[in-house]
Length: 441
Image (cartoon, rainbow, N blue to C red):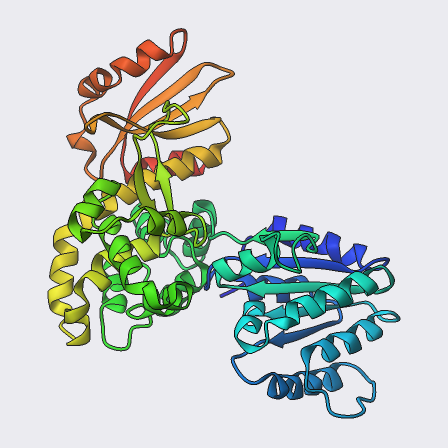
């Protein structure tokens, strides 16, 4: 798949590269796996001198042997003696950068926690002493959110405050997803929504589907639910390293949220444990879930629901992890039956997120959310507010638009209308095909 999007990120990386002509620059590039961090970094340096080092899980001395070969291949310098520590590799590269500007990309940087955690303090000392006199454009890439956060944003850690930029790479926007699938011959809104719902805009997943002619829903499901599908073990592969030994409890919580148990009380009544600490870590340290409050909720309001930020993980926990026994026995026909039965209900919640993102991307509203009252009464799928123009869009969103009753929607919004005196209200019924107007806006 060709390189798409990322214009803003490429511009920022280009600025940092230019600045490295006079002083060393350090960039942290993070985000979940499959989001395209390595591809972005390599795209940014394709016309510049650069060195790419991948930190695999092996002994430090063996890593250094591998890195020395890369240095010999890229730089015409003699390397004398045996180098067994990364600090010495870094010292050598800093010396090279005093006379030659280049970019050093270190991928999976968090792996030094298990290889040799003293690397971080050693690099801090070397960087502080040499940054001002080097021409090194340094890019650290990492996929384990909790560890990358700890390395660079925990005030107790040695590299805290050293990065000139911390760039968290996000999945493709809906417009970018549409560009990709259009290049493969699909311009209908239903295909766009299904690809968004399953992949969440992650480039690697979209690439896999496109390369296997699996963008339409039927082919997409055929590709996911079959023996040797790369999607079947993906959730486990992504998260076990993050969670460690407690992964079972975290997985159970995420499975329940994906199944629609979005209140803490619902989760605790099923698991029969206190989940406060787990939910807090899932939200903060792991950045996997978020709290969703009514759009007009007061700061201290306890009226809230949890949701999984990542569409693919939402899908994986709802349909794959929840049916792991059938997956392991290869009973994909059984799982497909469940998907056919429940996909409309599950995707209905994702469709709300789809329109929230489209309205946000329009730039016409400063606040976008949903609304409900205590006891889940008077639920409204989308409320988009422009406080300057005093305009509010209130919409109900359904897969089947004919089931939307605008008169009932206006009744649900009675208290909102009362709270926003002087605002003009626009009541709308939205389904997948209405996305086309917003995409072209």
